[in-house]
Each structure stands twice: as structure tokens, then as C-alpha cells.
Length: 399
Image 1 (cartoon, rainbow, N blue to C red):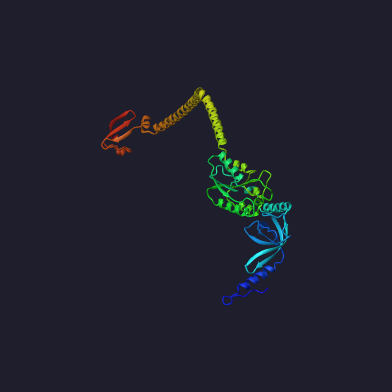
Image 2 (image 1 turned 30 degrees about the vertical axis):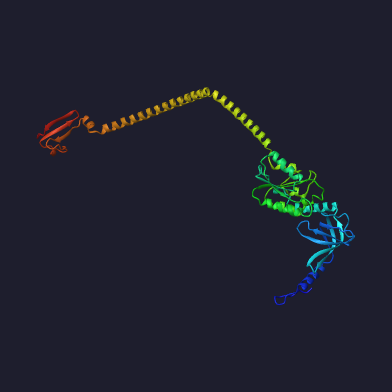
């Protein structure tokens, strides 16, 4: 099909654009479409029946016309179907619809097979990995609760949580939990609660139901929205035997809404009892420790006296030994010093002038000036002679 050439000076009429769109859609031919019946109108005696087919993962729907005999009587609103249809583009209204040629209800077995295939795909992507699970807060400030309006699941969660913790706060998001709009509403509620800074945990709760009723909680869009949430999510869907894919991606999978209430808040009575037990154990431990310390202190003076006496005895012995060693050392040093001194004194004595005088020598000086007489010529006039025992005067005479 050639491209439609247009410009501001040569625009295409609406009818031409509509015809081209119709031609493009007509080229699709017959196609098989999977979806959920959102609205169904059966009018007795009318040759054509009308329904709205909605995408299970997005808020997109298309009107469908069905000739009499094409729509099985077993199909009702909310049912999953696969239909063979031809797309029609209505030029007058500019709208797209499907003209069904064959409609096949999707059976339970096929639904379960599709869920199993989706489960394997999401598991391969790591959405169910244990290391992605986040721990629940011990004492959440606000609990986000997504459930049906005035449902039994809402009462079970709220009443049981407040029975355990009377001050528990909730932010309720009432949504459709089955039907065509369930997935869209639940995903939007998860995103709103996830962006609320006061919400510390999100609970998605619903009572029991058939596999078809619980299909929204195995929807891929919901599973991915829970996986992308930063706030821990608790799944509380159906009974213990119900295991939607939401249970696998949630951080905690509760078996029932009542079990979810038990998991998200602590039991005040149990916590007080645990505190009382811990206080009693701590008091008993302190008393035992005090008793042991008291026993140790009771014998401490005797042990301390004995230890001090032993220490004083050892120290006294060491001091006496040290004193003896010091005395011996000082005595030896003094003896050596005295010996050195006597030796030095003897040397000094032997070298002193007195020693020379003691051997019979004399020192002769002139009386006039005290000069030493070293030669006969120096002995002139009166002299002074010093000997070992004293000094006397003398005069030189000529022989």
C-alpha cells in the first residue's frame, strides 16, 4: 500500500485517513485473541450479541460483536476466553471493534498450564529468589491493607492485629479483588502505598475462592509490581491450600488473613510476658553473681593477709640479699680504693723532698735572698741549711 503523502498545503480529508486506517486493519485478516469478558449483553431475539473483551494485564478493552450461536452459553462476565475474530474499523464513528467468528472458553486445565508456564518464566528472572525477600519491621508505624470493601479478610486482619497490638494503625485501600478491574486497582493501590513514607508494610488480603476468582493474584502485572515495591509485602490470599503467584513474589506469604495479622504485629501480651521472664532471668543472674562475689569477698581478708605476708617475706629476703651484696660490693670497692691510695701515698712519699732529706741530704739556701746553693760559687755570706729534722744557719769559710 503506497504511503499517504500530505502537507500543510495539501492535507488529506478525514474520510481518506479513515479509509486508509480501515484498509490497514482489514489487512490483519482473522486473528486469535486472548482476553477476559468484562461486559456481556445477551438480548433475547436479537441476532447479534455484544461483549467487551479486556486485556488481563492492562487497562485496555475492545468491543466485540457475536452472531447468534457463536457465544457459548457457559461464557459469563469475568470468564477467560480465546476467540477467532476479524477486526472492523467503523468509518462513521472512527472506532475499532472485533467481529467474533469463534469463541472458546479457557478451561481450568489450560489456565493452570498457563500459570505454570508464567511461574517458570518469572522464576527464571529471579523474582521468587529468597535473597530478594525483605524482613518485616518489628513494630510498623502504619500498615497498608489492600482488600475488598467491608470484606471478611479486612475484618480478620484489622481485628486480629488490634487484638494483638491495640494501637496498630492501618491505611486501607479498598479495591476489587476479582473481576476485570481487579488487577488494575490492586496494582495502583500497591504503588500508592509504596510511595507513602509512613507505611512500613503492605498486606494484600482476600478470602477464599475458586481458581478463577483468585486469578488476579497470579497476574504478571501484579507480580512485577510487588517485585518492584520497596516496602515489604505480605500476601494473605485465600486459604492454606491456595497458592497464587503473589505468594511466591511477596516477602512473606501468610496462609490466611488471620495469619497475616499475626505476622505483621507483635502480640503485646506475649511481649510483656517475655519481658517479665527476661527481667526475672536477669534478676536471678544478678543475684547469683552477687552471691559468688559475696563468697569471694568473705575470704578475701585472710587470702589478702596471707598473700601480703608471703610477699613481704619474699621482698624482705630480696632486700636483705641485695643489702648484703651491696655491702660486700662497697667493702670491696673501699678496700681496693684504700690499696690504691696507699700505693699512691707510697709513691708520693718516695718522690717527696722530705724523703730525700730523711736519707741524709740537705737543702742549702742563701740567707739573703733564699736562693738555692747549687755550686760553691753560690755560697756567699750567711746560709740556711734544711735537714730532715729542721733548719739551722751556717757560714762558708775558706779552707
